[in-house]
Figure 1: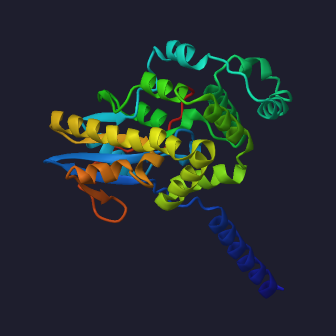
Figure 2: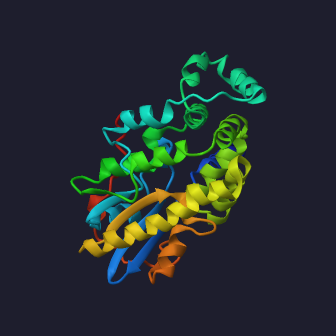
Amino acid sequence: MASTSRWKGLLWVFALFLSKVAVAVPALTPLFYQVDYQGKTAWILGSFHVGKADFYPLPASIHQALAQSSALVLEADIQDPQMPQWVQQYGMQPIKADSETQQLVDNYCQPLGICQQLAQFSPWLQSVQISMLRFARMGLSPQFGVEQQLLRLKGSKPLLQLETAQGQLQMLASFEPKIQWAMVRDSIQAPDVDIQALVDAWQRGDRQTIARLIQQQMQAQGGEPMLDKMLWQRNRQMSQRLQQLLQQQAKPLFVAVGSAHLAGDYNLLDYLQQAGANVRDCWQVSCDINTEQSALLPQKMDIAPQ
């Protein structure tokens, strides 16, 4: 009887061990690079604009790089106080949809009671709003986007921009109505499994999967012209702007851009290399990050409502 009890106890411990293995969160390794250009350094993190509380804290080396940097560089200041004005200017321009697309939108918005609200927006902004609702349903929130968390952690460091929020909204509004309505259809019809696949690819720093999923999405919405305007042109301009910022700074910069800008054809890293920069993947090759600053790292993410 004692022997049976002992074996039952061992089996219970083994089952508990397996259960912990099964639910263990995989190591977070988002795209993370060191760029050395004309004697200056930048660490570049591939961000995700929405997230969950359990994505944090980010890996220690990322926190250490941010602590050692002279400034935080984002695509744009997402907290710009003029944002409501620019949303009004570029996003409140309703455009009539074709009957098939309108029926699709009605079928989506009527059960949620948001049809009247959506109808006030330009199609591109309708697409953004619908995507945010779908993210929320999957437990993803802008509050836990990488940029929001970096802004909380930067302290007194200055915030620099590769673009402007106004420029980003102006670009989205510049797409012809046909493409904007394709964006709306995709925001409604994209399978949850594809959205989750992109989240998973970001977490493990899978450049190939990120590039494939983003390219498929943009090809479906607007073909190569959309890829050119949304990614390729901007990647070249971001590269030029980052080179300027590096020349102006004595100490390293910490840069965060959407992961899609670091993957696929004509990505930001390619343009930097073409300009003569040396690029290192910090997960594959040791980067010049001082690992003695562990005291600066948060032991537990202190999440405060935004």
